[in-house]
Image (tube, rainbow, N blue to C red; front, side, top):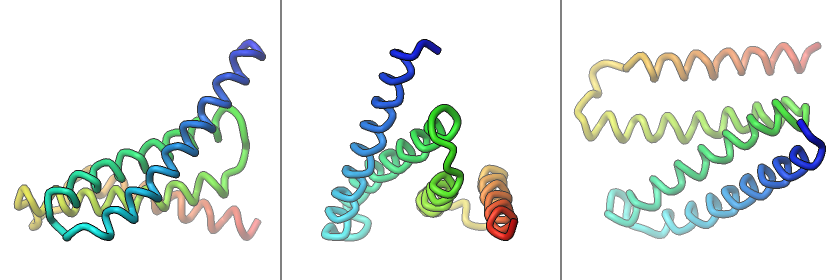
Length: 125
């Protein structure tokens, strides 16, 4: 990659990450003030989910291309897993799929568990 392009991309990733993080904090507070299950709660909850997804993706891009800080990425993995699993619970409840857990759910749980074991091994090495 050309040096100028790499700098621009790095700044864009940082700006996007910070903007999504700020919006996540704001929408989290807004959603705490809304009635659970109401129209506004659902709308802000979706926005919160996609902001968290953006944070996760930008942290992955940052880890791969710019900053080698696995600890920060692990924190993002676990934070996103909480948001992802919450969203899946709500979607599955709405579709009345509460009896069987889907492959996607097991796959994401297994992947997060692998990250957890990796974090444990990394911390004791």
